[in-house]
Image 1: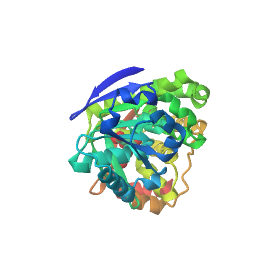
Image 2 (image 1 turned 135 degrees about the vertical axis):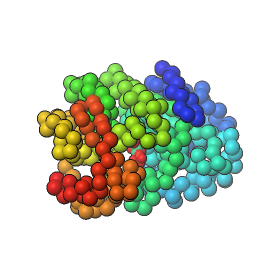
Image 3 (image 1 turned 90 degrees about the vertical axis):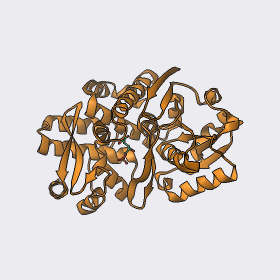
Length: 341
Ligand SMILES: O=C(O)C(=O)C[C@@H](O)[C@H](O)[C@H](O)COP(=O)(O)O
């Protein structure tokens, strides 16, 4: 196990990398904590969490909504959770987002922590303090930026992930390579087989490199007025496609990254050969690259992206592999570009 601490504006966050979920009692008091745990994770790993009070959360993005938020608040009231009760979210991004959001508003804020159990949650969703829920057709429309007390990364939990969910997580790792780390991009190309087969050494490297890249960017711009926007590479179109097609986040981001690379080619001088390279890498990790959604429907959702300011969207493009830039694109121009794809 490797312990690290990252300091953010209101909270220092402890990371326990390569720790076992069975050791959770070392970091939180079962008498003063409540586990919000994904129902599948509880079924598969609940035996390692005896002696904790649990509230189970249904599995799936469709549950990251106001209704489940309300059910969790009801459970907290029923269990008489007070201001010192720590909420520990154990599951994928849905559970960590919901836990952080409920914890941020219940009694005006209680402490919280995460045990991310999917690759996507370990490399992305659990880090950086973005917590929230979807609202209607819009992704993460209600939310807050607030940091957890700690994050426990247990790599063994990834072994029980369903095939599809496993591939999903690689989309966000590829994103980090595209926006900030060309050598990680080479590594992902060269070590694809070991990465996909879950080779422990390669996997811990990929998680820890991703965690370091994301944490560094968030430390620099926690409230997303500059470099943090880069973490949204592939997400502007991706979020719209995710909602329209009801597909997994990683798949939608994969398609969004290919679209953003093509846009980078047209508007930012990004070499065509690199769009081809990104597309190949994404495909080689078993992720989709082609969007078949209705263009107008994509545009109508994308108009409400959080990076919009009046008639512009701060769109994330690439300059080269490993270097992102934010370019304000007028909505009308974006519409025309989408139509021409
Ligand atoms: O942490 C961030 O900042 C990100 O943009 C990371 C994204 O991968 C993540 O999906 C995030 O939740 C999207 O945020 P949103 O602000 O576009 O809803």
